[in-house]
Image 1: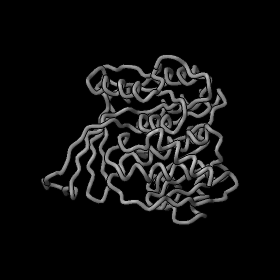
Image 2: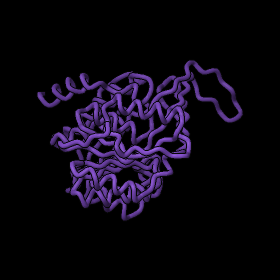
Image 3: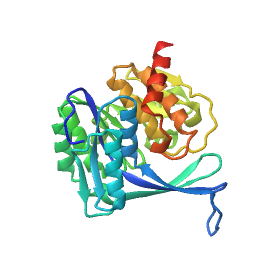
Image 4: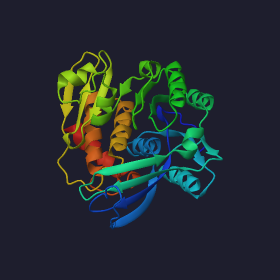
Length: 310
């Protein structure tokens, strides 16, 4: 879509990948060859996943990024159009489209190697100009599959527009103090939390969770245990996830973040937004793939109605 949203919307500055996924009973060890059960290709990339899920959860969404001038890139563009995302700021690169090689075992756990390709060809000035142009963007989401200077430039533009910023620090890299100062909501998982924490502590207690960013907002995703949210006063609230049988956890964190952002845009309180995000992510792990596992718009409408009306 090349037109501009007039209503409050979300801008995602992030990665687009083609997921190449192998399912097997067990992941082979070093030097070992194993038979797999299934191989699939699917749409992924943390930025793309979060953008698609935010749209399915009811938001108007801009995807800002780059893909290659190749078969994967063309397919990703077509998918964004089909999903209803605004793609005015999705550029083409001479580098190949990013790919993610994913292994999933029979318990649903995954291991992933990403090759960024075109995602590392984004100009920080272009990213900032794109965010600045979307004046109706009330929330801007970033991750760490792009070069950090790109996300930093985008967040500077977001704050100048008065937007709320959400940073998913995945895959983990050292975060600059400047980027953290521009981040309103930091949303790591358990491992990323321990990597960011100055004492490398896991989020095993409310006290530890509150200590990560005193005076600022943090949401920690806790897998099957749901999520915990620490507000600016240091109060921590834990939100359990529904008990489900996991098939594939790929993209579940992105599903949570896209849903959470959409719920904030629709002016739900943060705890309710976390609750909606946990429910959506719990649905996603019962299905294979990343975007292919996400709840539909109809499922999200029913889910939100059930939780908000309860």
